[in-house]
Amino acid sequence: MKTVFSPLHAGHAGTLELVAGELAPGFEKPSRAQFIKARVESEKLGPVISPQDHDLSAAKKVHACDYIDFLPTVWPQWEAAGHTGPAALPYVWPTRGLRADVRPRAIEALLGFYSFDGGAPFVKGTWKAIKSSCDVALTAAGLVSAGERAAFALCRPPGHHAGSAFMGGYCYINNAAVAAQWFRDNGAARVSILDIDYHHGNGTQEIFYSRADVQVLNLHADPMSEYPFFLGHADEQGDGTGEGFNHNYPMPAGTAWDEWSAALDDACARVAAYGPDVVVVSLGVDTFEKDPISRFRLKSSDYPLIGERIARLGPPVLFVMEGGYAVEEIGINAVGVLTGFED
Ligand code: Q9C
Ligand code: ZN
Image (tube, rainbow, N blue to C red; front, side):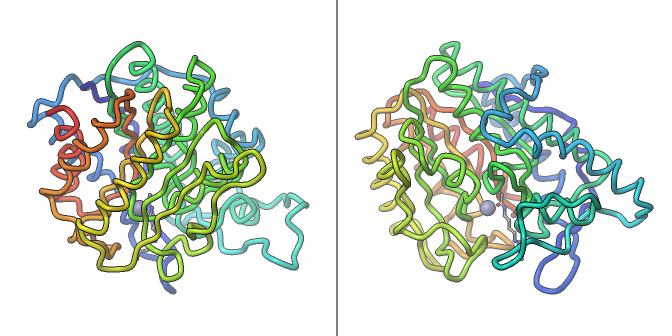
């Protein structure tokens, strides 16, 4: 299958994230994409192509216009405010009992207004990387729409924690959600998003929660004790017209292939029952046993089996890269899913 990749991701580098009381170097770093691309090439998965430039109208179909328009202004505003530190990050958020209906003017406050955590830093090259990542997803969606059985959007930064008007968890634009909406607007009646990243895709769930035309399935660590904490429970099944079209599979720390694959089988049965025209896979490989920020126990030999299972669904598939922080093995695991799909 073809891979879509942009070198512009590399400008999103040298970030910091606020985690457990300290500012730490970002786990979401350029080498992630470089290791994946190297593995795509060494495994001869197929051609690696550049994305086409898209305007922001596709992103604005799932995100608020004011949110998307804010993103390219962050770094210039941050610099104009006189900040000289390595990365722009929020430190204050509207919460229960405070007002979230008044949009503040100060950049420090706008960052909190449009985020849910201190995990989506900005540096000089961040906006271009965000935009290129969205272009990668849309270009790969175009390949699938044009008749390819599957395509790999090697997105960086990832997207599934980004909601209609918030960033967080290394995510800014929800690449998988933008692609799913693009499929809807280009001939697909129903789209399934299967999110297999270790963390719950809170942004994706929020975006499609009231809709029946995009089914969302999430396999992830139980939010009672794992990030992003405030969404992803099994009783969240959709709202209104969307009721019955959101499915969560929270699993405990230590989950290994047997239990994880049982959840995958259940999710796949629900996809088959839904009968989508296309499946978007939010492909995170932070379920890996050696992932530095995660607590599942999948092994490298498990990833091809995931691809094989997804191939048996039948519809064409767009794979969209999400998380995975064991950099040495990230290519083996991500490309393992893709070769498993093709074999
Ligand atoms: N000790 C994705 O996988 N918390 N985002 C990090 C580190 C944030 C993960 C905690 C995790 C965000 C796309
Ligand atoms: Zn993750």
